[in-house]
Image 1 (spheres, rainbow, N blue to C red):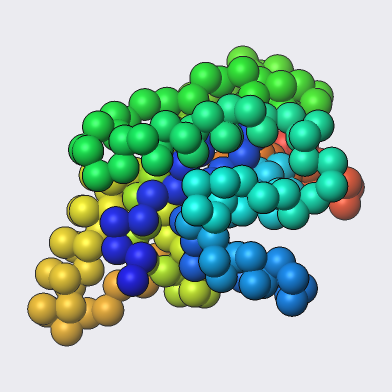
Image 2: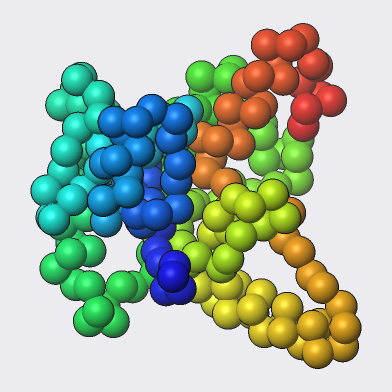
Length: 193
């Protein structure tokens, strides 16, 4: 049902293919069921809007003021125009949003890289649906990794071994949200890093 589904990624907002997200409210649930895409704020996972029949419908009254909406709508329009043409080129988002979030947490990007031993890695502009993880969450991977994961699962199944993913792609905003919650609980910076 979701084979070939693509997560469209912008600096602040993700556009999820319809049918992969759930909600508790009846009104939003009806819209989500009809949506070709759901626009979701990366910072907190809040659903902002749905795309139905090529038109974006707000789920929040303040949608016009939402940072990143113009970029997300332009990304959706581009995806509609190029759907099925094979022109989805792999590219990366700029690192400015990550640097902004690190700064909000009181970390310089060079300090983070030096303390963790991890380079700052840009997010991909789109990810491929690779099934569900062990907890029934959508598993998003780069297209090459999704193909390799499927092949590895099939090979393992042929040998009688079941492989399960625990987690896939996480946006910088999502990961740094975990970091911020740990800081708020009083966990020391060095322990988090």
